[in-house]
Length: 411
Ligand SMILES: Nc1nc2c(c(=O)[nH]1)N[C@H]1C(S)=C(S)[C@@H](COP(=O)(O)OP(=O)(O)OC[C@H]3O[C@@H](n4cnc5c(N)ncnc54)[C@H](O)[C@@H]3O)O[C@H]1N2
Ligand code: MOO
Image (cartoon, rainbow, N blue to C red; front, side):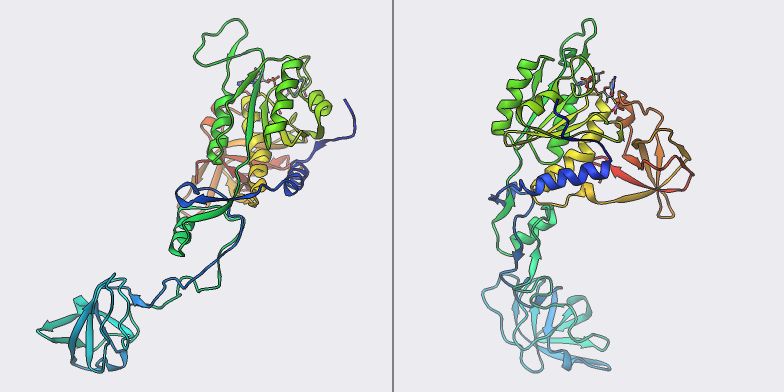
């Protein structure tokens, strides 16, 4: 195994290295219909091609008139000269002493600058009586009050949420220019693994990482290639890695990356491509490896089910978003207070499984769960978030502010 790769990196350094690697591998843009663009990352700024709203319009159902003519005392009658409903082909003008019946969203008639809601007037034939107390310019939405033509409405790197898809549509876009999704190959390795549908023989366990990892990828909007189960056989692993390196942008694997007699992946990645780093000072997940084979970035994650999830969240998720040009939510820092004191003996950073509680005083509190073993899925299954305990923190009091990484699907 060649020695020229970094090892035992801090989580922060590993993340920086991953982001550097992704910066040189940005995925190209493609046009996608809005219906399919949820969760995708914009590849270019969207400049508003027109004002939004495109014309001044009424915010309420009522009567459009000239605000300067509103009575200061008593009431005043306005002559009703017509109506304009949302979607009408034209609107009558509003002259002195006149008013026009208007509905929400309808263009404001020329001459009018104010809408009085229908609940506040009395209509007698052609006369509309308005009392004192109304405000000039009320209930009018000026053209461009939301977005002005020419301004940046959405920025490259922003993930398309339901509201942002609405913005694109409201500005006349039927497609979004987004980064292509990474093609991800997913391997689970290990002779002990059998599918959940198969009865367990001696020393066998059901393969759970295939489902956890597949679901984590789907929550990133990525449908992985059909998952390959590889035996702990160097020839099979070599061929699978080599082939995946030709067609994938990213390869994610679980298992076979530590120090055991059947842990072949580090040597194979070094042989077929390059190891960027192996081992990160985190618990769980220390043995993870990042390298490249062919055109694919390779993330070989430790097989312990919790280690697999923690390393995915800490380092693979940021990579997947960075490849698409998004700073990503993984980089967003959430803070909470510790619901109970913590003691950590080792020198690695720790990702503790925790439940989150949003208390009445507005504070967010994180309570570590009891099952913290890296093979104990129950800990993550019952958790809302991972508490990040930095390397240097050994004793933390209840109430201490800590960084938390919400598990996908929580927000
Ligand atoms: N002598 C040492 N032993 C170990 C070290 C070490 O540094 N020196 N590191 C330990 C740590 S920490 C971890 S984490 C594991 C990681 O090992 P591997 O990545 O090589 O993974 P495996 O040995 O293949 O599996 C570990 C564990 O996880 C189970 N597993 C594997 N794949 C799946 C799956 N798809 N679904 C469910 N469970 C899976 C597997 O049966 C093992 O129990 O190594 C420690 N050892
Ligand atoms: O790092 Mo291992 O993931 O502690 O069990």
